[in-house]
Length: 80
Image (cartoon, rainbow, N blue to C red; front, side, top):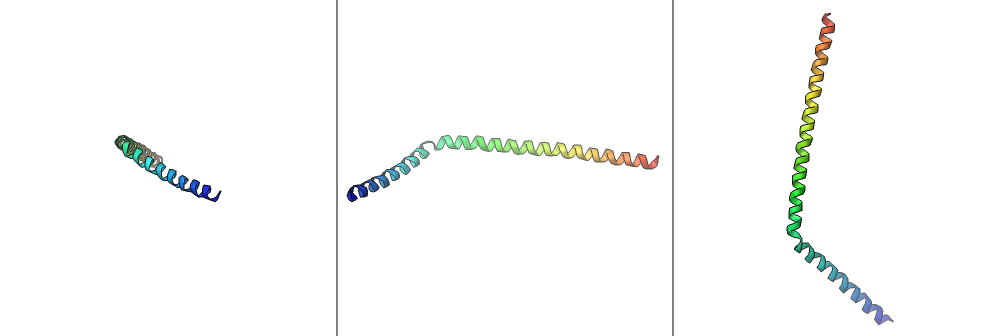
């Protein structure tokens, strides 16, 4: 019984080592696909950043215009 358990443990270690090697081989095979996906992800991140900057610029412009209008209205009320 003890010999069988030792044999099973050895086989288990060997199988887990083989599974790790198979995972590395699969990763090497799919590397060009991963590079393409990584390129797409970088493009999407860049587009997201540009969109965020554009939205922030529009909001800043609108708030600046609203502040300017508010100041001019306050100055008109003071002169009246």
